[in-house]
Image 1 (cartoon, helix red, strand yellow):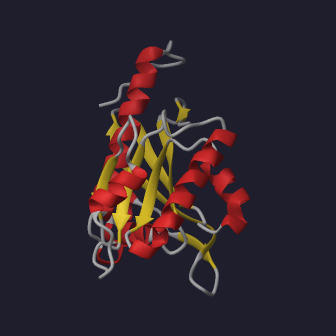
Image 2 (image 1 turned 120 degrees about the vertical axis):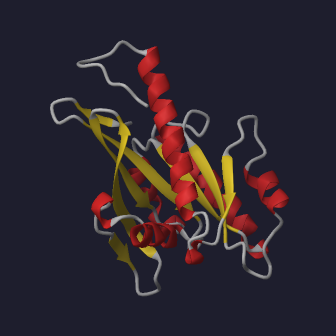
Image 3 (image 1 turned 30 degrees about the horizontal axis):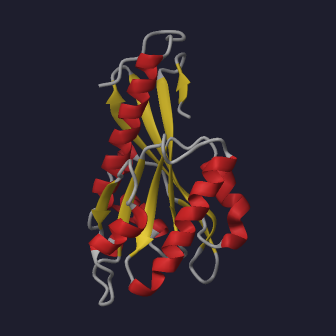
Length: 210
């Protein structure tokens, strides 16, 4: 859930990038770090193994002027795709305001995509949350590989539900649709935040969301 500090005039949100090992989660964060204005983002914190897989998490903070009168920050995290680090996944997902699921487009990685998606759902339930009430964006990464599964097939596997998610084709190594993915999940989070404010009694000073 968002952290609102009226005394500091600040609001912060948590976005978690999930997916299979080597699907491109860390690449997304690295590309955002490289492409965003240094004045609007933090340094990149990355803890990884010698095999270049995320061991604990990556972290990047992005500042915006999305909410009038309040400094707005999106904290971006990745989580390890390996089942071995499931406890880390559950911990990082706690109180997430939005999720980006990075799917590996390679045809032989579709079973792993499904397992990672099911694991995401299970850990959200353990945290008292659900994909049915959380902003979610699907990113179909590695669209440039020779054995990429058709987008229609990926949509059938991962987006075949009553509430369909926003989805993007991407090539994270080249930066394609990396920023578009972040913009989409950020806007969805802000809309969700505004709806929550409108449905509850305000606490403290009024907070307007553009």
